[in-house]
Amino acid sequence: MRASVPGLDLVRHYRGGYLRADLVAGLILTALLVPQGMAYAELAGLPPITGLYTSIMCLLGYAVFGPSRILVLGPDSSLGPMIAATILPLAGAQGDPKRAVALASMLALLVGAATTVAGLGRLGFVADLISKPTMIGYMNGLALTILVGQLPKLCGFSVDGSGFLSELAGFAHGVLGGEVVAAALIIGLVGLGIIMGLQHWLPRIPGVLVAVVLSIAAASLFDLAARGVSLVGKLPSGFPPLTIPKVDLADVAALLAGAFGIALVSLTDTISTASSFAARSGEEVDGNREMIGIGAANLAAGLFQGFPVSTSGSRTAVAQTSGARTQVTGVVGAVTITVMLLFLPGLLRNLPQPTLAAVVIAASVSLADLPGLTSLYRRRRTEFALSVAAFAGVVLLGVLPGIAIAVALSIGNVFRRAWWPYHTTLGRTPDLPGYHDVHSYPQAQQIPGCVIFRFDAPLFFANTRAFREEVRHLAASEPRPRWIIIAAEPVTDVDTTAADMLKDLDQDLNTRDINLVFAEMKDPVRAKIERYELTGTINPRHFYPTVDAAVQAFLARPTDGGSTLPTATSTAPEPTDHPSPSPGPSLSPD
Picture 1 (tube, rainbow, N blue to C red):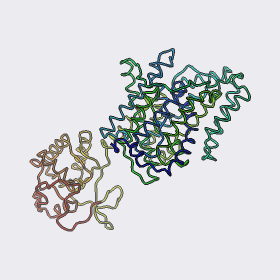
Picture 2: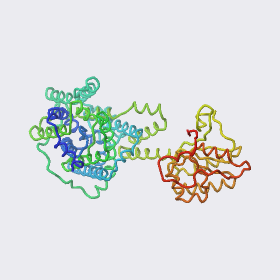
Picture 3: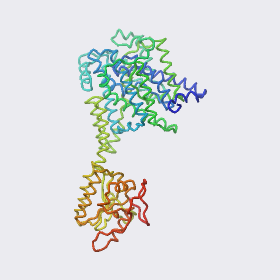
Picture 4: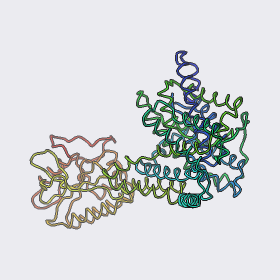
């Protein structure tokens, strides 16, 4: 039970000496949770109060079921546009807030259910479906989309468009049409400057809190509401009851695609952040338990008028630098927000909306990773192209199609590498033992009548044609080889399609008096060769434990041109993870 519910273990073994540090860190964390929760709720197209409900419940849910000691979950800027893109088309043209909240809560329940089931099924590997280059492109596109979407709010007006291009056009039309409210723009820019300036020069000071306090003071002192600046207003008092969202079954089906994308981004972000902070303290991250913790946080939020959540690296960093020791820090933050809702609901009524826009814009800037994109350009152009494609998918098609494109690009890149893997021929150099890539060592000498070929991938249905055509090309080269030795150590698997190809290839080469020989084939792969009954076509004596052993056999062959070979291995040994040892001294293969 303690393994399944880490919160029980926390209560049982909590040290009294941690209490003061957790209390202080929790109070400091609350200063970020409140304005960010409200800002990210509006980013998701929801009332600001739902951001506070979400913050409370997800903190409590993760404190009970989450395995990390200090990870902080909550409303997140990267999920806001995805939530809005999922629920707003279903909320209708009128944008009914109650219906939007119900849809967002159901979305949170779907995300929570999906991640919990995946964690129980030990499917933590799904977080690897997005590669780092495509994630960089996706986040850069998301950052630009969020930035453009918040510019009208920063300037004191609104636009009707949805999507990057329409919002950009609407913003330009509003600016040219004189809709900018000067007071709103000034308060927004000052708030943005404070947040980003303190983050850069004085990161220990919570810039968001300073900007919120000063903007509330300015709104009261200069009567900004009378100058056209929109304010948050008084929040509803109290706390919502346990609520099962009332959503039509057709809407649930429409929410599923968004739930999958949100779950994937949330898992990737959470496991990445958890790994980063765990490495600092020498801890290990269990991806499956993290999935259960995220699922519990989302389920808790969904049952109390909340929306999907993820990990916040910035809030986790604040908790850590403030001295947080355990998840009690999150509990303190949840309790503090609850007290504010119950007894001080009007505390933030004079908070200007442009300040919330500044909070979101600052968060969007932190999402962007231009140095990472530049590094990809320098190090590997193909992955840079993938990143740019993911960026364009988000900007041009939207955040939900963008995540689908990011996943497709990541999987497609893996498949491309296996489909057209690197392959080469090997030769011997006078100064190095073993057999080496002739492209890396142009001086490497090949043995007359013998070609050593290396194919750096498992053999499966997609690359069998590439393998066969390359071997046939080698067989047709001049001078014609008598042996083609496959340096098979990189070949970690052979499927049935590849097995049929090898059978046909061997028969074809035999008609040309060319022997197909294998060296360094791993025992599990050799066992599959036996199971496929390929040794009925391929001579079982054509398998050698090392490349050097195969070469020595070639050199010792009868000079009459026959194909009789000295025996190397005649039966498949028990499967192991390594090639069988050479029966005698040999040079190490490359």
